[in-house]
Image 1 (cartoon, rainbow, N blue to C red):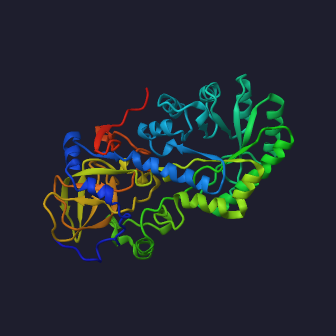
Image 2 (image 1 turned 180 degrees about the vertical axis):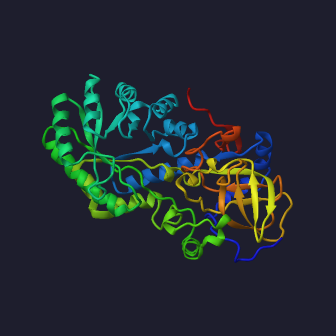
Image 3 (image 1 turned 90 degrees about the horizontal axis):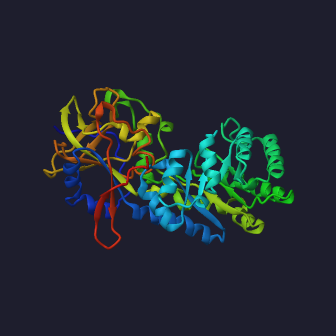
Length: 442
């Protein structure tokens, strides 16, 4: 059963990745699928190391002293944290479990920043005792920190003027009160931070420059205030501009199963002309920020998550069945949409899945991809993807570049389906070996 261009959604291939293609073209994916008996996530920690080094290189390029913290919420795997412990990359955590896991993987408390709103007392206590840096989000949180009775390292989180309805941060009046309390209580006030939604480097640079001024004022009042954190917000570029622009322009309801409708604003920006380390470069170049940091002697902290995981993993499903419908098909795989978390945001993960066929080329075939549960809404891919051949039972579908937020943000063993395990590829000695990721600490 063939397919015309009318029934298939516009293609949206991920950027070419010859190294991953070489792995996928070999026997390993099929062997792992057979051994595991279900879907799995493939982790490429070498890519994590490369991405972290690229961010650090930008800081060096601008002569700015700073530190990169991996935002642990982007992926729960221990493999990334183990790499952070070895390289000295910091870790950004938001809860007691994340903090416990980071410490258990060997990350020193002084290399951990604790973020998140209204932190639990147990989290604050351990963070203080381990010497972690704590982003204070509210005045009552600051009082609870002071009540622990030990010196606490803190950043005061500023409410972004450009996003006054944000639930994160202290307004101008609250900041003044917090600064007074830090001086009175002997808090080690190391600087300021903010939580800014979106990927605009100019907006991030503008607010960062304001934080530098706040540091200088705080120093004049006797506080340490020698660093600022600009958080994350470094986009990942998944596909090229022509494919992305065509997709946004041409996609329409008939390209999706059951006439599902998406507006362009429903999607993550899968193409970004300024992404990852280049986005940091744009931040430092804007408003003379790098020069202001150097002149003031203020360190720059950043907390990328998705950007450190760019091309560092993929997700593999096995085809369990194929049903032909009118003009397209439904491919059912051995997992669920809960393992591809963009569905959590009522959206669609758009980089096209790659078919690893056991039978070779055939006629083009358009199909959406459904999960193995009994829910109509369990669609791994709503759009009708143009595959090079009709998938068959036992073939594999590989979703590229899923390490950033896709793998485990919304995981659930619904229907008693097992959670996809994470398989770590180790290439340290020139060979390619695999192991299962270490489970989180109990």
